[in-house]
Length: 253
Ligand SMILES: [Zn+2]
Ligand SMILES: [Zn+2]
Image: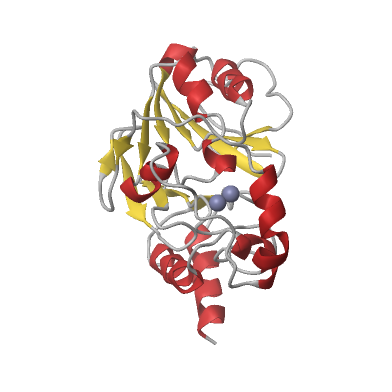
């Protein structure tokens, strides 16, 4: 059991909420996760599926924070399982939303989402069905456009890293505290046997450019971070960069 020092959350955490490190909470929403960093204010990384505002605010509350203390919402990319509760959460808080300009255009409703990748079999077969069942989200205008290398003023400074491929404007976020915590969004998934680029039948179906996604995975593997958190799959809580580098070597073979 890991025991964290300092202020601890009131009572037990609800089902689906996991404390990854002292300040980082993971909220499981079925197959996708959102994250909270709780310090003097609350930062949210991705908002998960639609209609999940309450579990996000409940997590903040269990960590002793009120809705008006949620100040920043960092979005890794435009997909509906990551921006689903954005409108609801922005409506209930005074938080600012940060996203790369290429994906911002889709969240604002200026551009349609590209949809499943028809170059792979799963995308061709399941694509039309997936488009039908993907929820249509309310467009959000007020977004802070965030580019590669920008420091987002969340949790004392969070570095944005452009990791295109899964989507054109995909961002990963590196939080330099606690030995480095990487929020990889869907640039990397950890669903089967270690961190992987989002390729293969399911991960690849919604990946816009496979070659670029592999390149972005290599770029992340060069960074220093102890912990890695993913949109899909559980976190790696120690020596995460080593797990990434092992996988890069396998990709090269
Ligand atoms: Zn995605
Ligand atoms: Zn996803």
